[in-house]
Image (tube, rainbow, N blue to C red; front, top):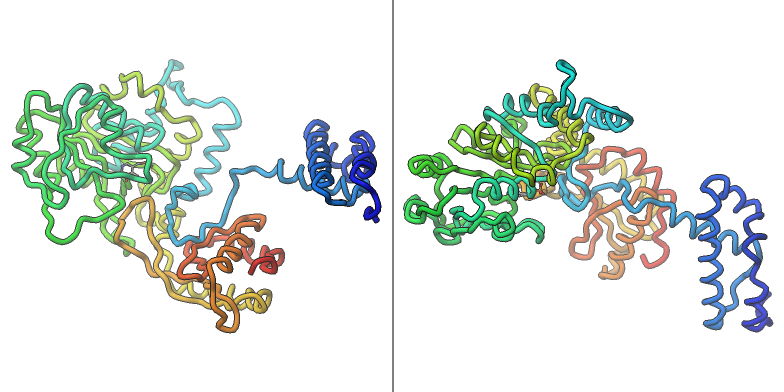
Length: 475
Ligand SMILES: *Cc1c(COP(=O)(O)O)cnc(C)c1O
């Protein structure tokens, strides 16, 4: 109907903001969200239309149409960018997707302290000022065998704080085989430099011997350090010195032995049918003076960096002014306290701790779920994609147990009738799943779209969304 109108007359027939705001659709949005965001959305919609007209287009400029555009702009603006997704990547503790899911008790604990005042740094027995670490240190001591413990924002912060406290302007001896980089931003040599410590590399990438550590010790040495090689394995012709031996070398010279454990298992994972991962208690027992580890990897809790070890060293670490800059908040402490308490009962941990429940999920269970969903998806999508159930391997993630994988099952989408798949096809499918109300993040493998179902807890929500999945576009 606008075909005959010139650009300028079309522009002048755009409805005024005030009139649009009185339209029933937008009036309801003003009530829901307030006037300012709706006005902003209307202006943005009008701006888009003017641009379209200038470019030679002739859009529908009726009140109803412009109001609908504004409503769409508003919806996009009101959708949080940080929101839940389905992690079907096959990597359980996925750093980019927020790592460990928390147990309900931890969520309740977060809400209860976030809602109002709490005893965060207040000793209820004496009525005096308290220390936020007291909520965790005795639990950590019990679970790790360490004399004392403290907690900061994440494990990178823990390593920074430990090195800055114990080794500023001094040397720390580390094997060349352990100079790790994790996710680009965490590189041991860089953290060491920022902490003001001097890295003294010993050995070679694949082989380091006791003598290498011994020969490197001098009057500037502050500590010997071992770093758990979280996201890779050195295999083949290798030699490394085990922790008890490094500890003995350090202690002969009255030096500290620091161990960055990374994943930080508090229980023996073999008890749940998982591969062995050194526990914090094992490492303390082997003679580590300080152990650092993450809260949201194998521990299954919130993002945090835990530091456990000798009381005199922990006291020193807590007195470092950087501790204040790196400390964690009450919500983290509430969740962590709860997750640590669950670890006191290892027998029921696999049922009560979601991260461990996901890691121990049986392949037969995952496959049965995949079969159910494949049937449903075939009803909806068989004209767009071939849907099959295939065995796959999940990864633990977060650099934990890098070479170990867990047998799992996946829904795999390929083009119908054996048509040749292409990068464009599979990218379009992947984009369609990411557009769902709760976005689905799968993975692309050899031009197929793969959804590893190990971490699919809410099957009902997943299947209810299939009704709005649109593969028509590119796929
Ligand atoms: C994961 C990891 C870190 C970093 O821990 P964040 O909690 O992500 O800060 C440091 N060292 C090792 C060995 C790790 O595995």
